[in-house]
Every structure is written in structure tokens, then in C-alpha cells.
Image (cartoon, rainbow, N blue to C red):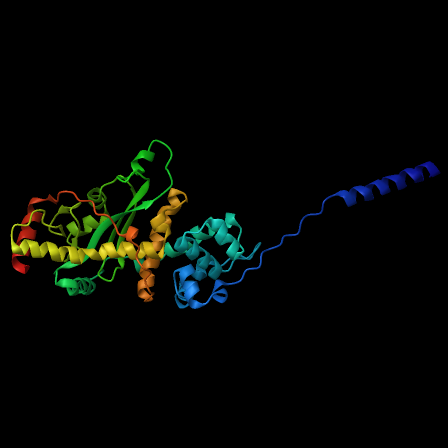
Length: 350
């Protein structure tokens, strides 16, 4: 090999070394330090931020944490941190990146975390949201309502509430605009005297009327099929039937006046249920910024958490005035047999 050839080889090696030095090295991933909020806050502050006591939050982690275990790839997110992140987003309705900063999670991960937690909760829906399964359970519900003011044979109170959603694009968007002129989902709820939700329908657009939602629900078919011995109480937006009593539109006797007064006191359970639910989870009052599919999922998940909070004897949050539902005052629809059954019930019990 000549001297010229040797110099050429040395030059190539030298240039390769330069280029190797100039090539950017792959940035090493770094993950934010994640400290459990259970260790960061005192009890009162934790409850204000996460809407459950520390004891209640630990029980929730025990209930749903097993379904949220990560496979360990990337920055492993523990089940307890996933559940607490979702609770804070739903309860305080904070901007997502604020919650992400507090928990050391990227903003892009927050929606995925909330959806994952909601799915794990909704999988256990049948355990926490259900109508009475047998006569003994139904009698227990009836007795609880009777203890309020003596109204007999009530197994549940029914009403609807609006949950604000983002504007829905496309030809169907106008169906979601409700009577208050904002887009919403119209959610039907049946609750018991302890404010537990026994049935929920969270798929109807905001312009749908209360009576239509009930008429097309599976719950109505169950009542018409004689599955329950008790009846529902509803406001004047529903038709009066043998299994759903509404107020008397123009009471003409003392018995009818007493009936209306006791009807209002007993049916107030569902209004209080909405107030307690929306006060604990502020996103239900102020509205969501998520996709319609996720919103429907979150509403059911929050109804389940509401029931669990009652089971855990969690302290209620103060109900603000704007949380109280505004009733739709419309003439009572009276179905012939329903009016006769209600009149006989009033004559016998009032």
C-alpha cells in the first residue's frame, strides 16, 4: 500500500469520527416524580380536593385498582394514582393540565386515565345501580319512603336533569340544544329514599322530553310487565299511570291537597339526589369538555361513585343554589286508568 493510500484511509477514519461526534444522541427518557396524594395532604384538604375521605379513597382503590394495573412499560402509573387523578378531574373540574402537573402525568394521558378508570367502574354497574331484585328488597324501599311522611307504595322517585356538553357538530347538533338554549344530555334517574340511584339512562339529547325518555326505557316495560309491586312518583312532565303517580293538577278536596303536599315531600328525594351528586362531582354541574362517548360513560361512572359514597357514609358536600333542579311545569297527562287508580288511592289513604 502506498503512502497516498494510507493517507486516504486515515482521512476517511478521521471524517467518520467527526460525523459520529456530530450525530445527536437519543435523548434519555425521564419521568416526573410521582408522590401519592394520600401522603401529600391532611384529611380535610384531601377530601376537598378528591371528594372522598382518605379511608373512602383507599376502599375505592381496593375495589377497582386490580383492573388498572399497568404492564410496566414506560412510566408505570399505579392504580391508586390513576383513580385519584380521575377523582380530582371529575370532582373539582380542574383544567386537565393543572391536574396533570400536580400528579406528574402528561396532559395527553389524563383523558386516557379518566376513561380507563370509568370503564373499570362501569364494569361493576350491576352491583351498585339496580332496582329491587325481590319482594323483600322492594318492601324495604317502600318502607323507607313511607318513613318520610307516610306516602305508601312508593318504590322510587323519577326525574331528569341536564348535563352540559360541548356543541355537537353536524345535522343532529340542534337536537342537543335544550329549552335553556345550551347543548346537553338529558339524563333520567330513579332514586330511593336514601338518595341512591337505582336506574339511570344517560343517552338522550337535551331536547328530549322527560315523558319520552321514560316511555322508551326498559324500566317502563318492567313496570308494565308487573315486575314491581310499588310505584314511582314523578312530576307533571310524566303521564299519570297506575305505576307512576303525578300531582293532581287542580286539587278540589282536602284529600287531594294533602296528597299533593305529601307527593312533593316524598318526590323531593330525587331533587336532593341531583343536588348531592352534582355537588360532589362538579363536572356534572359545570359541564364536560370531552367527546360525547366519554361523557355518557363518565355520567354512569359518577352515578356509581355517588352510590358508593352513600354506602361508605361519606360526608355530603354543601348543595349550592344553582345545583337545585328547575322543574318543568307542564299540565299533567292523565291516562284514563291511571287517573282512576290515583283517585282510589287518594280516597283510601288521605
